[in-house]
Image (cartoon, rainbow, N blue to C red; front, side):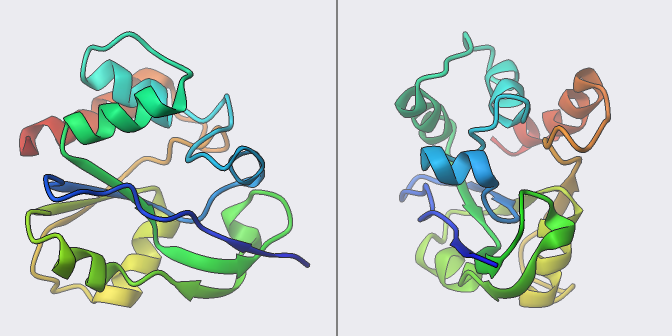
Length: 161
């Protein structure tokens, strides 16, 4: 089984919100882009949230994050996994989330994209961490909740901007 690695974080000194996924899927790894699978609703949700015309251009996607003070990373630095399912993740090594937060003191809340990232994050940081942690429904196509329902849940992000 192949060992896969996550991407570097998208973060800058203005970041106030951190969104954490688990680890990139096959399509994302092939394209070297966060949430590259066309059925993943991550980008669609964010463009809707900020009322911006949807774009497939990766640089415009990153710009959208930065303009809205959002950092993006994964809880898993590397792991072994067959396919893209979180349930297939084995032998994982965590990203240094604590270091990222210490280096970016403006981050005031963490949103987890799905249960896997949340469970891993709680293992890393503990339940009584100093900033709030909110779990949101996964944007993965495997999480078969309607887009509108996911979008409604994700709107909470705007409360922190």
